[in-house]
Image 1 (cartoon, rainbow, N blue to C red):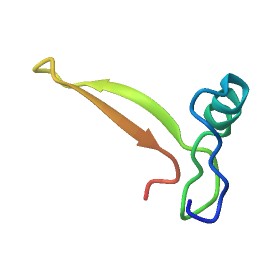
Image 2: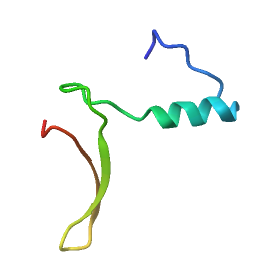
Image 3: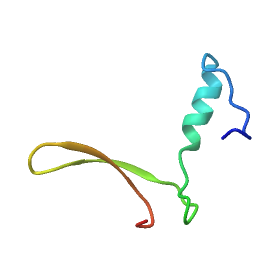
Length: 53
């Protein structure tokens, strides 16, 4: 991240561009899917799903 040029937080187009990039898996390079999992007890947890790593 330090090597990338980070744009201003107030620049709306830059924020939309950064949000659209998403995250890539460090193992396979594919885009990571973010899902909300709810346990039987009702506890919510955000999970990031990709290649199983």
